[in-house]
Image (cartoon, rainbow, N blue to C red; front, side, top):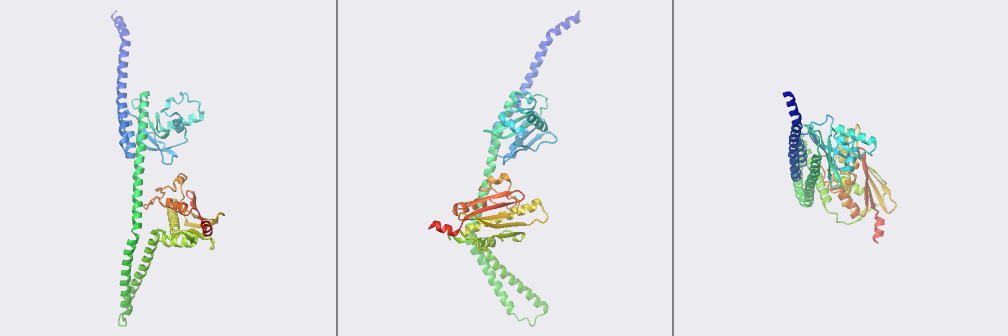
Length: 468
C-alpha cells in the first residue's frame, strides 16, 4: 500500500517540481543573457571614443566572443574602393577556410541590404522572403555554411552597409533570442559609427601629414634664391681654389722629376680638372633648380614643344635615371607653337615624366618581365579647333580602374615607394592646363600595361587672334 501512496504523492507534486526547476533554469538563463546584454550595451556606448581603427576592431570581436561565450566572431568591412567586404578582425575558432572577402554583389550582401536586419541561418528556409529564386537561396546558404555563421548582423551608417558582424554558435548550445538580436543590432550600428569616426581621424591624420610635407616642399621652393646664392658661393670658392692649384701644377718644372712623381702630378692635375668640371655641372643644376622654382612671371608667348621638352629633360635628369628609359619624340619638327607659359608647361611635363618613371620602376619590380624597358612616347595630333593635342604615353604599371576618379584629387597618390609623393602633382597639372592655359587634360590607363595623358593646348596664332 505504501508504494502506491508514494507513487500518488510523486505523481501529484512532480509537475510542480518540473515547473519550479524550469523556472529556475529559465531565470538563470535570463540572468546570464541580461548580464552579457548589459556588457554589450555598455561597450556600444564607449567604443565611439576609440580612434585607433585596429584597436577598435579587435576590441569589438574580443568583447562579443568573451561576453556571450561564442565559438568565434568576425568583422567584414567595406574597403575604400567599395568593391568588396574584407575580413578585418577575427577571434575564436572560426572555420578552417574562412572567407577573406565577400563581394558587394554576393547574395549575402544583397540580402542584408534588402532586409536591413539580422540574418539567422536556421531561419533562411522559413522566412517569408522566400520569393527569392531557389538558386540565390542556395548560394546564400552556401555562403553562410562557408562562414560557419549562426547569425550575421549588418552595420549601417544611414542607408550604407559599412560592414557586418559574423557570429558563430554559443558554446552553451543555446539559441539566439530576439533580445540578443536587438542588442547585437544596437552594437553593430554603434560600431559602424565608431568605425566611421576612426576612419575620419585616420584620413585627417594622413591629410595633415601630406599638407605638412607639401608645406615643407613649398618652403624649400621659397628658399631657392637664398640657397642657390650660398651654394654658388661655395662652388665659386672651389673653382678658384682648384683653378689656382691647377695653374700652379701646369707651371711646375718637372724636368728633374722622376717618372713616379710626374705620374702623381698628372693624377693631381686630372683630379683638379674633374673638380672644375663638377663645379660647372653643379652650377648648372642650381641654375636649373632656381629656374624651376621661380614663378612663371614672363607671361604667355609662342613656345615650341621641343623647347618645353628640352628644358624639362634638362631638369628631370637630376631626379630620375634617363638612361633606364627611352623617350621618343614622335612629332614633326615643324609642329605649331603653343601659346603658353614656358615655366608652367615645364612643370607639367616634369611631373608627367617623373610619374611615368615611377610607374615604370614599379612595373619592373612588380611584374619582373624579362627584357622589359621603360618607354615614354610623346606625339601630337591636330584637334582641328585651334588646339594642339599632345599625348604623353608610357608603358608603366598603369592605374587601377577604382583609382580613375581620384587621379586629379589633391593629396591622392598611387606611388608605393619610400619616396611617396605628396599627391599634388596631377592636381597642379590640371590647374595649369585648365585654369591658366584654358586647355583640357584627360587620361587613359590599363593596369599592368601603361597610361596615356592627353593635353589640349591653344595654338599661338589662334590665341593671338582671339586676344586681338
